[in-house]
Image (cartoon, rainbow, N blue to C red; front, side, top):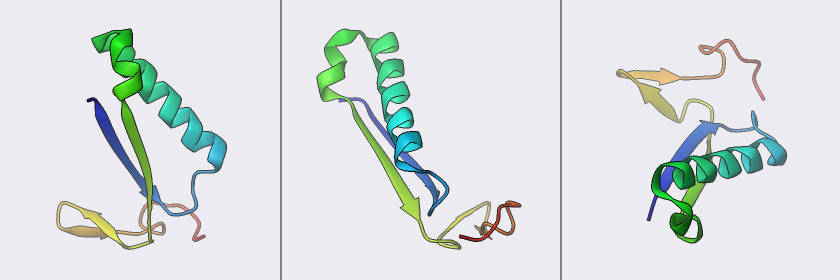
Length: 70
């Protein structure tokens, strides 16, 4: 089963953008693996609290990414 897990800062995506991510990711799986994977494809879009994630040993915040606080 193809699976993708996207994590975004809380509040930067509305419902239509999340839906677009799900549709486009599913389409990519189908392009690579064939139509038979569509019913088994899973795409999870998660929102993470500001400061609740990091990269390269640094906590990321909206401010550090140059985004306005939500």
